[in-house]
Image (tube, rainbow, N blue to C red; front, side):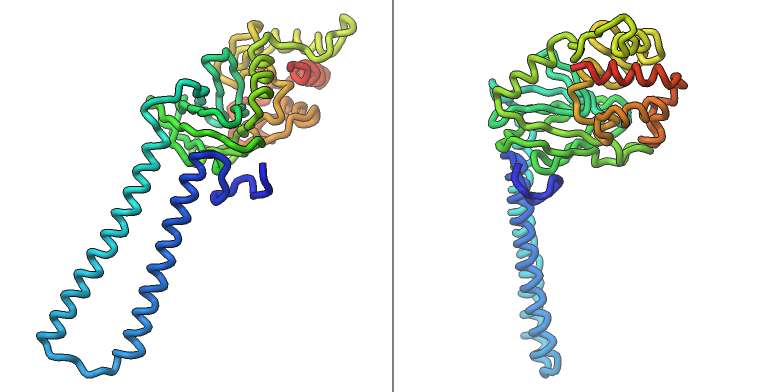
Length: 318
């Protein structure tokens, strides 16, 4: 990714973002031209004609009529031209036909995190979206609760995520890098903490990531002894209140919270707002609302030694 600000709205790294940026800059240029023209005419009227004797009523009315027509037709034509380009770009973002080689990603918005699924690859993750560079990507957006808005400025424009309706975004990302995104529609207490990241990978790196994510969870360091904290953490997870909400492979079938099958390979958690470090994860397990106000995961009252074991287990899942 180049040196532009990560959430810049006038920098672009995909075909869709390029179209949006060029339209925005074009409209801005037209607006500036109109501002300069109107300001110049207003100044001319004040400086040259404010003290001039009035013309005959017939001539004055004729000129007035011409001015009224010009001030009506001119803006209408400008709006029509801008509207034509805007509507055309809007239809391009939701192409009715998807390229045959497009990668389809289903993203479901929750209060306040993003469920990410790749139907053709058998991959389920959360808050982090990996896509290959220079390949069409079709993002299919759904909401599990209220209205959200999917926005990653340098790759795609805002798209509302509405309960009971699937909206689409289609784009081709050109530059390898990490692109932050966020919910752009107020959706509740922790709206500001509902973020995500899009990783644009080279095709070979994306294929390797997808293969690893589709595989069963792999513990990074196999337990060395019966009392190993990773093994102990696995037991705590399987027997605690984690499993009704979170899934890890086939060992748990949670449906209310993010899938944790390959949690150790993620860079962030808590709606992509907290770096995935042992210290942050321990603090989260002690008291989630302290890190993310309004989060629906309550403090679980887990003993301190079990928190350390859960951290070791979850961090080991790659």
